[in-house]
Amino acid sequence: MQYPLVSAVVLCYTQAKFVIECLEGVRAQQYPNLELIVNDDASKDDSANIIEAWLQKSNIPHLFLRSSKNQGLCRSLNRAFSHCHGKYICGIAADDVWLPHKLLTQVKLMEQLPEKVGVLYSDALQMDETGNLLPKRFMEANKSFSVMPQGNIEHTLWEDNFIPAMTTLVRRECYNRVGLFDEELFYEDWDMWLRIAHHFEFAYSGGVSAKYRLVSTSMARAQFGRIFDSTCQICVKHLKGGQLGKPCRLTAADRLYNYAIASYEHMTARHKRNLLQALRFKPSPGMALRCVLALAGVNSQKFALLRGASPRQKGHRCAANSSLRANGLEPAELSKTD
Image 1: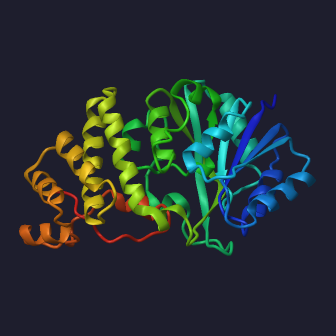
Image 2: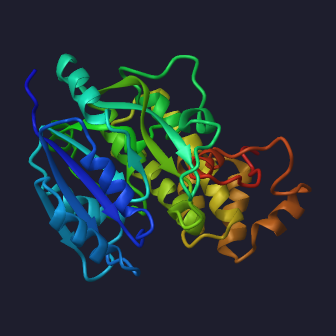
Image 3: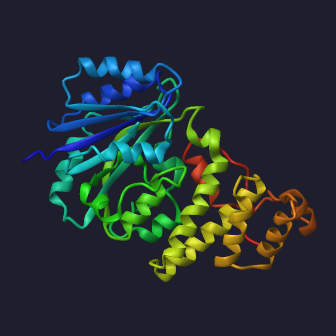
């Protein structure tokens, strides 16, 4: 077979303990035609110097982008992707690791699939901070399917962001069609998968292709309030875009509703705006009352007292829980409906 160029993007932010293992996973790839773009987003530790020293000894064609000021995830990805030349692009955080067969197996499969398939994904092993494998794989721990979603999965993605990003291989044409990452968002993957799924199909490759590390300093553990806000932004953006079919539109409105409640319960920076948008796209008496109280500065505990129930009453679940569990968290149960 021919070996089209693959662009491998490694993103690092203060991951000196793990970055060498990640880079060695890139070097161990059995695939012969690879370019490496590494972006260090102004790490607070010695990550950048460690990366630079490793690259000087590497025989992989590479580019090192070293930021002097922290740019955030989406802006860093856009900077790195703007330097990619490959037919296929894949990215990984510096605390995760690819298995040696990942690129060779996935490119072989993608080269046999029609061009309407834009993204190939697989399952991943999970490990703790020290590298010990955990009992459950990524998919089992976060979203269980009897048959893995393939083809047109847009509606399935609205139900849950279940794609392990570090396992994906994406056709460059996808980014040419839908554009790069939305720099207004705090996290990148769900919005991008939704945009791609509107135009392209997804395929699943059996087995595992990466190891996903659960660490105490992960973005979700430190910033889950911003994740709630960003998720609401994603829902509103797509609902306002007017391109969603009815099933996706209804599910998007449900997701917005749930995450808006979660943001109110956690008093996030955008909770008032989130509630107002949820009221617009899925009006209900309960949401209207939340909006009035939130705008008056009343917190969710007082709302619960007015409703005569705890905001974390057993039996009420929020879709936000799955996103937190995907990052190794066990969130409290959150309200789902009125």
